[in-house]
Length: 280
Length: 319
Image 1 (cartoon, each protein chain N blue to C red):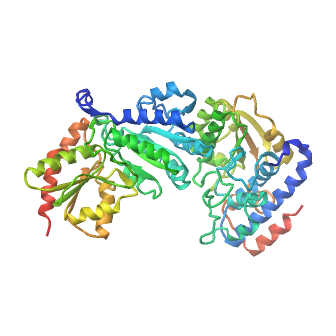
Image 2: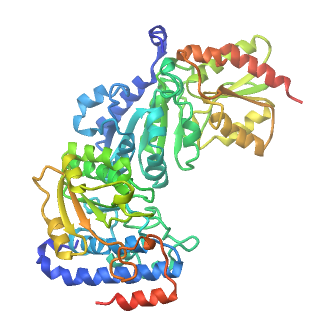
Image 3: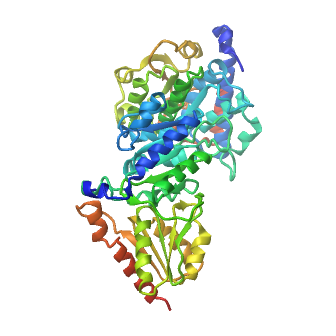
């Protein structure tokens, strides 16, 4: 297993940054070639995913069912561009498979399927499913007194689904300190800003009121993400909610904080401009 | 359900069989856990809770979490039996059943308790006469509707044995132990013929099976030879048993479920595309009026006499 904890955190930042850039470029190529996808959310999540897979989680890609692995649940299952890219980068399957994104009979469905791909823990797509499943995984770890951690990434608009909040009670009641929720707080849902649709703020207070430990970070700052995600949860007695403030479309000027890129797809000119901007 | 009915001599509550079996299983398999939504008592899991407090997860009144947590526990190497009133574990958590359990194809056992109209006077919000129709759409979800205490035990054991998602529908309606040949075995997907017959076939499951046997016995005295097939597994269906039923030239299905999309619908799909013969689907028409479970069954003719009459009428339709 990789042991990022043994390394100095700051040493990891350049590699994580490089992986995040690669995820943005590779996922955008997938969306461009498929002419389908959710690139705005891919980009808001790219830094979080790169940090988890290259700085936080312990896993062995060639043993995807290792009982001791840390688990990651991609609750915002529509952002498969970024998710499949990070899985390929982490070694779960060949990068060449990414070329088949959404093609007939591809293992890379628009939403992830655990029966098609290693590294996918549960099938997501409908919103509000990831946190409750991740809670069940964390409970299994709690029953066995196991060391693995369970991470789940949700969108912020997704928190309008009630299933998250009934489960928030369960996770806090059971003091699931082995469970970490990361909210990709890009403030844009499919059709408009979250705060214009169904107000989420003050989001940190809501999670605290539900009995969770809350950290608010810049979701594009790998150092900050590393800091809160690698801190030992032992003895905290609460599940952790990391509110990662992000921008939809982060990294490309014309997509930045622009709701049109929730599931917008680029034409040739836009694609080329994005690739010119997505450089180190 | 009236108190009198539940105490009928020689009749059993299949939930007791479920509870005893899951406790015995948990003794020998440490992976077995139960998941409930404040449904300990209604699932008769008080004994399990006492014996294995660490292996019971009570999520509170939260069925979406209930079902999803089951999926997560399976990911963590457990064999979860997720138990709640059938009306809620299905209808309230349908998308979790679809995405987290069936489509994800995980090793979770869903137990739908007190199915059908067992909650009688509490009304259609608490009845579960839609569950089989809803769940039958998930092609990889095994569906078992046991008919008596022995078959409930066997269904729970078989569910634990197989690797994959299973739904077992457990009734609280009192049923007698069915007479079977010694050495009878239960297998998922295999129907059992309880009464041989050649003029018509009654295909039943759950609480309706003993009534079908009584109807066949009554018909025999009139010279009508009606076969009784206990189709405990609704998915996968025993298509050979249905083909054989068609050979008798008339089929009556009966279930404690809506006439839409349940066992009757499943049999009709096969019959319509293979060997169409006169067929009658017995069950409830939809939302039912206020009444006890027994009264509702009487009202809709789901009785020994009602089944016998349906068999006569269906035989009369033979060309």
